Image (cartoon, rainbow, N blue to C red):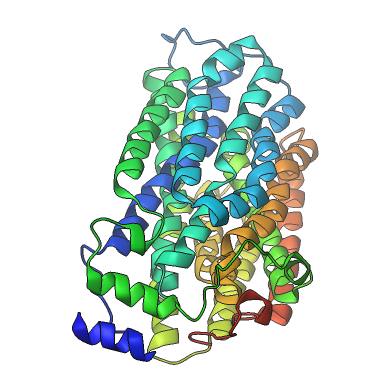
Length: 464
């Protein structure tokens, strides 16, 4: 500890702190649980929707008494996309408020709000599609602060050479939530009824909030159980990157920053494919590939198992390449973004040409989503490379644009697939692939990996 203190005072590179049982990795794991909850609450409606419709008992269980509804294809599209109309509203405010007041309670209360409205979903559905849409919008408002707040918290907690590892562990909770929620929702629909999908996941969310409130602190300096060695390791590694003096935010420089717009375009493009699959894959499995609801949930989850695994492994590899092989940060971010965007584009198009080979269709869709996990160490965390002091605000900006595909993607896709033919879905897949390719090229041309001059009083970059 004394040697670490000496390094800190002299401005020398600090000693590392063990990862095992550390506060920063504890935060990463609990954040993973939080994003598990957030995404489970986001996607469970996609499976429940199959059982909520008056489609002559899609689940095969005739003993259920839950209500069913006569919503047409357009109404379904609006219900599935409505979450994102609320989600987009709190992205930039979430980043600003997290920087000003701290991320812990903003993130915690945001997810808790989503939990509360999830529990109210069955009541809203009985009242009518309009009420259900309103509840989903309110869920989106609560969940909209999560990613900006988490990025703002990592600005204090993630040493530059551990960013890829810590953030991919945390954000892999999104894939885990999807992987668990899709098949489990299907099983709940089959053995109970669709209303229990929302009750069970709501309870899981309440448990997370209690743990988050008790165990998490905004910064290493305010954490009651962190070791002095770890605290000094984190703060000394970040002391030349962060500038939090005053409330001034260089909005002009932020909004005219080409490296930021490179992330915006990449994030928007990637999310078009991601959200199209996230919200409509269960429908595709049911209406086109003909799987039952039990098979549907399990098969719809397959793509996200690979996505989560490659995200975590990619995080380990990205930091290894930067720290041990001395690759520049910008090279690593662009390489991972290219693989994670071009790969999914190729395989999502291929999935539309598998004909009656359902196994191959599922395999291609799984590979497409799995390769997408690579971007977790690409543009997805590049905000912390170019402006750690404003990472939450930058994430709010990019995620605002990246939410648009979630709002319009399902509506457009359902409008293009009214007859659920293979040819109609091929068009949907081509659109997704084309947008993905454009984003990959744009980010490769304009992306950066250094702290921008406007983001710190004394420009400095780790690992460039």
